[in-house]
Image (cartoon, rainbow, N blue to C red; front, side, top):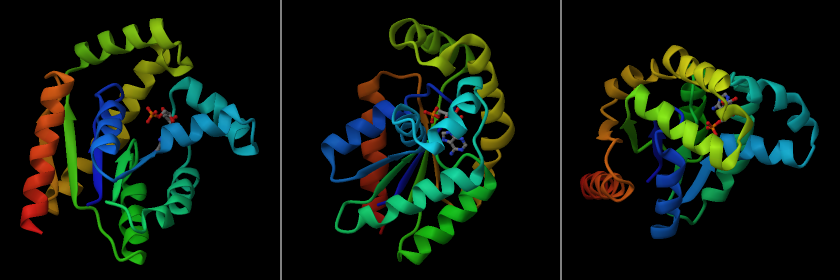
Length: 192
Ligand code: AMP
């Protein structure tokens, strides 16, 4: 089972991914986490992406595709991958299909968490006050939302055409969203 958690920033993808890692033998692949780790370690990559990320803009496809490619061998012998924050562009989605195919795998299902913009803004304001993540400030967050609507939302028809898209109400409680995700996984596993 290789699933993509899809949705705008602050939709709850990271929270649900962690829950799945705890309950299933799946590997969490978050390009945002990988990039933040690169920044924290002061690596060359970290220095290249730090300002772009703080502004709320997307880093290049090449960088994130390569980060994911390096991680795919880790899936061997596990329950599969949870992609969180990747893919974000059509080029990334196509690259993911090709990379997974070379590991005899494919995207099993794309779970879209639907949350309205006002709720996202409220969540982010709370997270910024608590955690102080630089790209959660109001200006950068507005850019992240714009990037999502411009570059990432167009992936929905790509996955819908493949019969892989499932939509879930992301405004519900963390538990209710988790239960809905569990039901989708159970259905897909039963059908495979
Ligand atoms: P996230 O934690 O997923 O919200 O990602 C935080 C930031 O990392 C984004 O605003 C982008 O600057 C960068 N980033 C993460 N994943 C990607 C991706 N797949 N493509 C481009 N930029 C990304």
